[in-house]
Length: 241
Image (cartoon, rainbow, N blue to C red; front, side):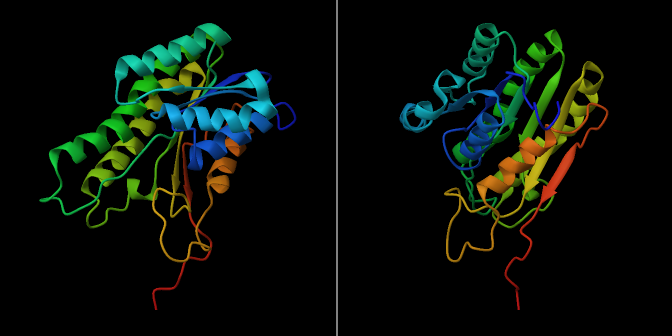
């Protein structure tokens, strides 16, 4: 794909695409010429996003309420898009959440919720999308991980485990799929100003647009090049002194 024709009408899937980083990714991909099909767990969030996007993009954008923890629901969504659009060329695994607290106080329900969403959900979508990409000419799978994928912090047992796992999944999938023309990359943002975690002065943080830009920049790399991990940090975080 060249910068001038980044998509050629191809189809992209974005999980967690109704707001935050996912929403910025959806908008950037639409501007770059992609057909974009996004998911969100909340039907209300899907409807609100579509009300804002469809006047500008029409049938180029579609959304569906999908709980990524549900393997069958994810597979129905991916396969439905593949059948209607004639294939899937890009998956951006963005759906994620956090539950925090000391490891000995973390509830079993919170542990399962975070792992099922951030890691298992990404696996279900990756596996289903890769099967479609193998039928075509390959594609891209981009997993939105985190600097917490390699930097543990107190109170982050579930979140760290899910993101460490997502990075491992990304790098193993990259080795499994690259000979089929499927490129896999993990993007590891640092602090991002979204409603995922917002408090105090946020002016120094990355924006959702910064992360979305990393996604669309990846798509411009020549086929021979495979950036498999991108670490993205705020340029000037607050000093600790």
